[in-house]
Image (cartoon, rainbow, N blue to C red; front, side):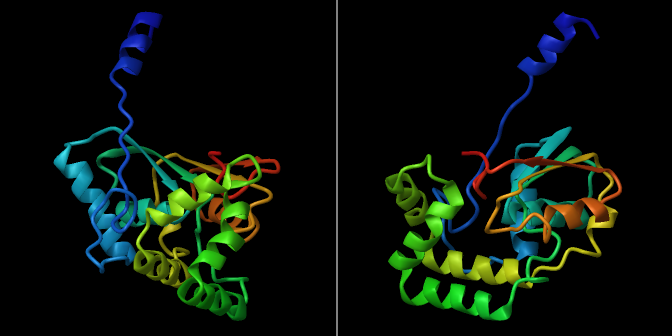
Length: 208
């Protein structure tokens, strides 16, 4: 491929993002925060736009959503996969139940304090508290709680070996939300066509 061909290919690339139900600018139906439904939402976006030769990028819980899309809808439209700071394969394996219960209790009973405790570790010191709060308040409180329950109960150990597209896994060694040794290291071992890249000293919100 010469330079002109490569430039033409880049010119044809598109970046498409959408807000998960109950988040950002999407509607909040008050239900459907399970992985099957969320994967079907992604499938609806892909089908409605007739997307092909896709690189799917899933961040945090979104990593499990894109994997469930592939095991539920197949990889005919997908060429590559990128998992960024994902909750895979089974976040609850290694995290005490007492911690999970306390986390959910604080989320339900004192949301402002929950934000104060969790926003800074998520974004790191270089992002303002105002931005932390703004992003969090764009999300339905119910969606936050039910998505957390979905994440805690998720188990993708049987699905990951079935993913046949080339996969790049990216995570930080200082991710306090999804510890590297519990998530991406195990994910890379389960996937037959995956490569793990570890960033130093970044927060869970590694894109910041």
